[in-house]
Length: 291
Image (cartoon, rainbow, N blue to C red):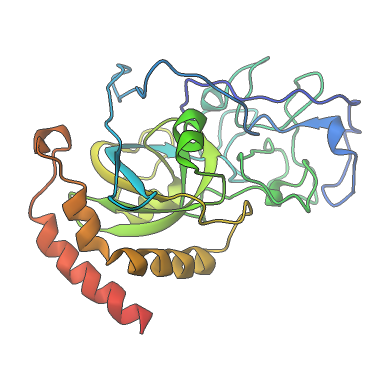
């Protein structure tokens, strides 16, 4: 994951046995979920663009609603995929994008800060255990399946100080639209990260190059968040779709969102006005799916 924020929580405990199977129940204090939420203070909402420069992203809110939105690019997030990171750097993403010794933010480590490697009973033995901020609390920290798999689940990331003031919690739902081709997908807020960051599965659904090492897009992606809509737990694809459709129908469909997302100074968002026509079709399709 490409994120300028260092997220880590310090837990007391002892080094785990190297041959431990992921199904064993352990004291959670033995491990560090470096993806867990921490309070981060940013001077402004200014994510890094693809050239490494900071660019301001305005955030809007729908009238008479807690729903908020912004238009940005998309950096591809591989966190949570069991084959995201490998000690030999042969995983879906570069190990450097999961941090570095002493400041890992996408890999589970022991108390000494050593990344944990999957065992024979895990999905990808030999790969690091990659984590997301949202996790299944019924599973141990060492279970790779306890995190939201970026390669299968459409999810988004947000900086915590963008999410918290707007009442957005991990597990809440979002709608993401590619303004260039009209493709859309519901998603779940599953990771603390930068503004404009989505999982591999989300990128694929939007027609974006989903390669975590080289993919992504620099602009033209509309993110719409529904604060307080989740239950703080990971969800299946079907649940994300069903919950998302219900939330969208209450707002009047995609066309309203696209119309509301265009400010007086449309150049800020670089909206493709032809999307409104596409949105009409998307709304009809969405309405029919709700019947």
